[in-house]
Length: 479
Image 1 (cartoon, rainbow, N blue to C red):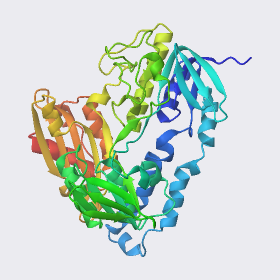
Image 2 (cartoon, helix red, strand yellow):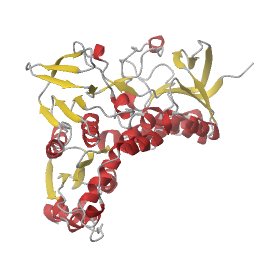
Image 3 (spheres, rainbow, N blue to C red):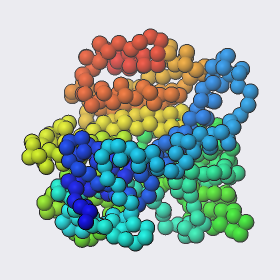
Image 4 (tube, rainbow, N blue to C red):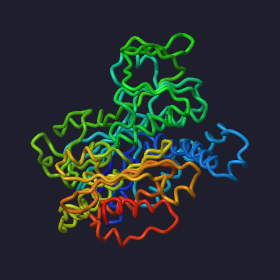
């Protein structure tokens, strides 16, 4: 009889679950991972990788057209077929053979099927044939099932068969007309991509474009989208949706106006993948986000870890930060703390300790791959004030930096640092402009390391690079 007992069982084999399992195995424990879909998860097949592949070709063409010499060499438009073919390659053609092979090489056992939690430290896995296998964890069970697109209760929307981010990222053809409901990161990136690929795009941005970013960032992206031909309707809200017999989608706004499209993409937020997981058997509510403590153990309504402290949650499902890189960061902390507890070693749960994910609250980096790119880390000025910091905001025209002028003719951008005046450290940093994504990590290090401005003065940026903006910001601050 097979032994189905492991030190750790992970439910969800996306990037977060894979990293949890890998860390515990590297720590000397055994691990099994449960997946009902493709190993590799949302990011590999329907999010980060395919969407950035769609956007990259557009960005490369745009960059070439902004530099004399290369501009003259560009004689045509995007080859949509080639763009989609490249996207398919980065999605591994929606096959997970390579990811499964990696699990095997890492010593992680894979069980395919729906995982359901059964007390205590038991996970029941039901495969496609309906055959159930019971797995037992000696030390911990980790929920890393991620999130799915949230579908609002707009009359007629479900019946109209809308796209979520999955269908948009995996589209085999470019619709002539695309309506996008939402104004956040996914909505903005997909509006950028599909407009460049030939769609006539209408964006219904009820709460504005990128409302959680610094205001100047959303304003720049809104301007750029409109220049690209996107109809950006700020404050617009869908009242009803209907797809007629010829496939046309009719969206009636709450103001009475009508928008017609061939497809409608809904990108207004995410919901946790916690249905049908047996959460009720441990006193939790199916379909809810999973609240966690500092070391990412799942807690009940009283804020205390569930009896025995054996259940953990990492990634989107705990709602701390819905970004793949932060989920992987959490995964490393979870894997390491499980190993420490299993071996009776000390747990370092102090701020910035090995077994906590402090950056989730203080230093989350994010890039929005629109035109222009938005790169940010830490707090916006508004968020810093709300958090009680006494701040000073320093802005600088990124286009005035010598390296920017060399990078592209007519370079437009802006940089902002938010300084905690009491400690003289940066608590927030935002860059807007072409190709600013690769500048972000320097700001992330400054925020995480709480590097004093006096010390940053000695971090000399190479000339002539766009990074010279650091010098200009410090000069503007008064150093």
